[in-house]
Length: 135
Length: 289
Image (cartoon, rainbow over all chains, first blue to last red; front, side):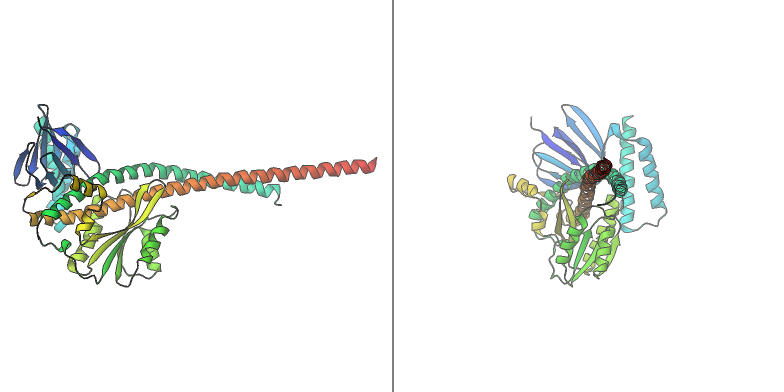
C-alpha cells in the first residue's frame, strides 16, 4: 500500500520523520485528512491536534501554528511546537495557558505581541485539550 | 640570565593563567555543544522553509508583496551579528573587517552583540539600533530585532536589508558571511544548494494554495525573514562558543609550552650555579695544596 512520508520539524529539532498511512491536520478552516496520492498543496495550520496512522494504530501530537507542504508522496509540517500526547506536561501547559490569558486580559498588548501571546495561549490550550481527551 | 627565583615566580604565574584558560575552555566547550546542536537542529527547519518558500515563489504567478519588490537601492540596512564578550580569537575582528570593507555612505547599521556596536560607533558609522545577545536568545528575542528591521523596510526608510554573521562550518572554521535577506529575490530563496537540488529532482509540481497565494505569502514571507535571522543568530552563537573554545585551548597549550621552556631555563640556571660553586671550591682547594 502506498504510504506518505511525514516529517514534522520545529525550530528546536526535527520531531518526526517516517512513513505513515494517513495524516489528519488542523487546517485553518477545520480538520483535513491527507492520504497518499494527495494533490500538491501548500497550506497553513493552526494550533491543534495532529494525528497520524501507521499500521492501524493512531498517534496524536499537539502542534502549534505553522505551514504544511503536501505532495503525492510526502507531507512536510513546519510548526512552532509539536509534543506527543504522552509527553505533555499538564501542569506546565496549564501554567502557560494562565500566563498567556492574564497577559491578554491586561489589554496592554498590541499587534505582534498580542498575536504572540494568543499563539502561546492556543498552543497551551491545544496541549491541554489533547491530554484531557486521552485520559 | 634571570635569577632562579624570578624564573620560579614566572612559572607559577603562567601556571595560574593556564588554569584559568583551561576552565574557560571547559565552559566554552559545554556551551559549544549545546549551541552547535541548536544551530544544526534549526537548519533542517530553515532548509524546509526555504524549499517551501521556493515552491511558493515559483508558482505564485505575479502576486504583489512589498517583500518581493525590488526597489532602487538608496539606503541599505546592515544587521551585524557579533558577540557580546571577547576572548574568542579573531572571530569578531574577521567579521567586522568584512563589514567595514563593504561599507559605503548609504548604509545604516543595526547590531546584535556589544562588540559590533563598539566597533561601529568607534568608526563613526550611523547606528539605528543595537540589541544585546543574551544567553538563551530565543526566537521571540530575535523577532524583536527582525520586526524592527522589517518595519524600516516597509516604511520605505531602507530599500534593502543585509545581514553579516559568522557562519558556523565546524568547530575550527567559522566564515564571515554576508546575506541579503530583503527584498526576497528568487535567487535568495534557493540559497541552500540542497533545497535547489530537491526542487529540481522532483520536477515542476503545480501547487494549490489554501488560503489563496496572496494571503499565504503575506504570512509566510515575513515569517521567512524572522526565522532566517533567528537561524543566523544561532549560527553566530555556535561560532562564538566554538571560536572561544579553540582560542582558550590555544592559550592553554601555549601556557604549557611556556612552562616547559621556563622549567628548562630554570634547570640550566640551577646547573650553572652549582657548576660555578664546585669550580670555586675546587680552585680554592688547589690553591691550598
